[in-house]
Image: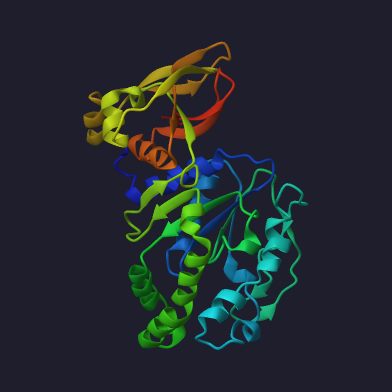
Length: 345
């Protein structure tokens, strides 16, 4: 729910994912893959995430795996319509590791190449590498990002979950001119592209392995399915406000949470007037506490809850946009996610 009428359902989901990514610091550029079947909306999602991450003060690098294709002769050596050819021969995954992911990883030199081929001209390139800031967020969109050759190369995966029927219709409209006709586009997506994607889903189960999942059948109204971990994992959330209320927990999570008392130091609590009617209805009040950084002698008490990544996504959608989620140390010595005030709110 949003406290601002200018925020759309899509911008809220993009913003919450950007909050999450901007809060992560692995000690080297954060390597984020935006995965999904062909025509899932990955490129648009990645571009919007890059803008939102940059707005949160982190340098953002947006790249497409299109720049890491094999030359045309190899891509089509098993036939223009071959699904095996697309799955096995389209992408130069060795170059992705060598020139991009490994160089920006914990043992890398911080250099990267934006592409190794010009896809339109089929020209192999040897462009000079660029330097990534240590706190940069690399966001790469592409297909098959969680195949075995790339495992361990990503710090985060955002999986755009779309039904094949929706993606197929979207692809035909998008690529009819590029592929010669609507009929030809439909044929190629059925026989080559989406057949390869079905193999990828069957062999690697990338949806289950992605720590961030966005259902993107309706791009204007995406749904944040989970964030912060894969299926079966748990995350810690510290609350000092209405998420401690039983009625809010029942409405957002469907059950009561078992919390432990804790606190955060270096913060102070203020009050925010909420205008979103759904949040007011869930909490029973338009006066919500909000926390800001303050004198290191100050502290704020609350509760820390162990929740699922799906429940963290629900909490993200409950909190209005005057709050932004950060990872902070607790007085107990653990760390947890907490919603803090957006500067200027």
